[in-house]
Length: 265
Image (cartoon, rainbow, N blue to C red; front, side, top):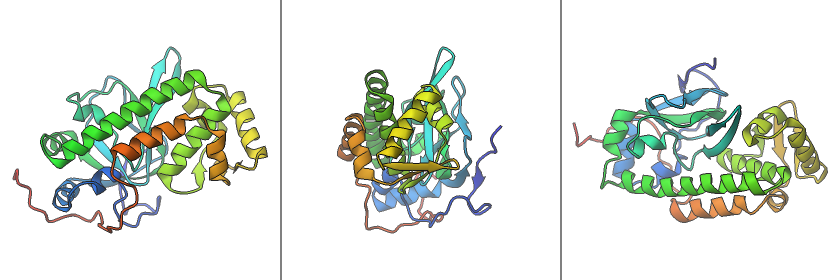
């Protein structure tokens, strides 16, 4: 059983400089972001840590900073990833859509820092017509497009193309070229046999696009990897870029506790 999330500062993994990376938070007006920050607890998500399970109540929503969350659906005896959430979004979207029960399994795909908020507080802060409500509506649309595109990709494209897409999406979220990843884990995420993933990764390696050893994959040629991917990567990215605030932002707001006054208090 994975260790529970722990407050940042009680462990060294992962490095975190305190600046706001989450695009949903960065897209809020300064006063609203300060109010949301006041109710966020920074936690370090551990590898494979379970956040919520199918049929269980969602107690917290998560705004990833450096962590990446995987959302999985069970199909018979198999489990397939249907979506991911990193610094561009949140985990716990059903709570925003008036459902406090998850139909999917969510766990930390890549360990890292996330802002955690209890569902009751989140429901109040995300109520219409505030800025948080508006940006979450756009995120919900982008995430639904990601899920739809992933379903189409799983049915239509080769394992090698899907591997390249998954590596690119994960690299974008961690903002670095090194990923903690094994072929077994990638096969699990893609819902395919390990032999298929091994062959696909070998082809990407021989092409000089990636290297992997010791449970780590290093992206060597991002542009080449995008060329090896199917069109699904570019389609999903375009939706997020159109609907969400830009990832790059000159602001340097940090996630230290805020003294903003809560109007509901």
